Length: 287
Image 1 (cartoon, rainbow, N blue to C red):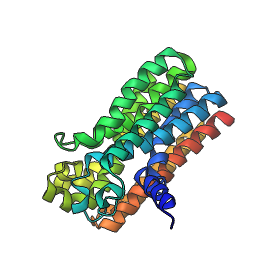
Image 2 (cartoon, rainbow, N blue to C red; image 1 turned 90 degrees about the horizontal axis):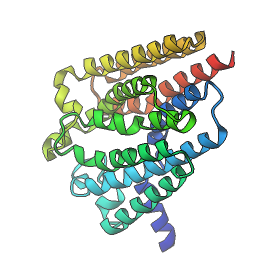
Image 3 (cartoon, helix red, strand yellow; image 1 turned 90 degrees about the vertical axis):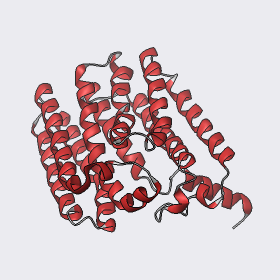
């Protein structure tokens, strides 16, 4: 492989473009909010801005995550081959790449209204600061839920010029969802995290981790059910939530024995949970 091709490949892996699950988990709640705030007919231009912004900000967040963990990743089985851990990319390069990606995302946001721009500043801070919370916050997955869900209030602001209480309720639902899927993810790294002093909900919940994950799924679905009831959404919305509940039950069968590969499979499978809810939402407005 030529030198410049190897460099591009390293940047791609640093941004996790080869592993799009993070983009999807960030995108689903944003799409829920865009469809609800647009009453089933969101502005196409705004939708594309948010999709591109999601890809850019998730990529920037991954770069900053690896930058923050550059002294730890080499000691964790799952992350020891990441570009910063192996030395393929320098810290200065990573920092510069994160700055370029964040600037590009902000360049998209300035095309929207003032409230959305102001909210984007908070979103940028959340995305770039999350990787450092694992050093001093016992429940960093909650912080991740806020960061991953901040597209919800931004979507409402972009299309309606305001952020109603409903949007914040959806953000809380996303926090519970993030707690569920990222605890599944954290179980995979728990032994390594204990050795190197990284905090996570997998460590915090201890032997109650599986119960906590399932409780978070219940809270998420209950809040979204309340959202549907308040909006008088049609039956497909609730069908989508029922399918999501069935998927959550399937996740229980994967995580109950706390095997690493099965827990990671459950984490990845959350993409289908988010997709089921979105499909129900679109169908609800369609009929």
